[in-house]
Length: 186
Image 1 (cartoon, helix red, strand yellow):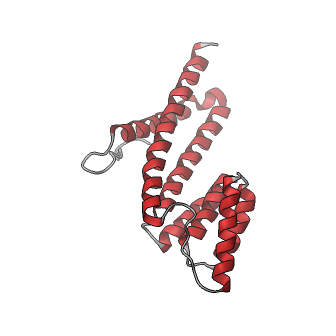
Image 2: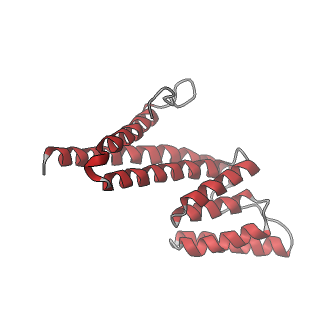
Image 3: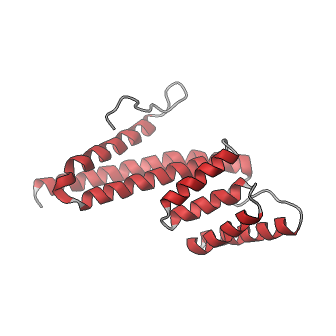
């Protein structure tokens, strides 16, 4: 293996570790907070009446399908539940989550933003939106890698930006906030 390929392999390994830190830093606190505030994933508010019962049943089946890894089937259930109860952010949040899991990132971004328009403090949507951005960044890295040598610089700069974000998470908050590098070229 020549030096550039070995360096890229080391870079990918370092990046993978950094992304793991990023995902854990985003996921664990948000999951803990969402479980405290909403009773955990899967506890959508109950609504009286036939439409509410039917929507709730579809939502619950969707959650079962998520546990089975059947994201497309879950998406269909969540979309039906949301259609019956458009005012329920958890239903739309799980539509977005399922869209992300089946690779429809643009739709997921739009749905997460709609959830946050309904309730700007809906923590699970914030968590999943952050995870979607990480997923999108990794897709871009993969695309750059496929370009070969002509995109080495772009690949390395994006990888460096992700490593820097992971390092900021590892370092922890300063004055109660994560240090977001505002004056970076990226």
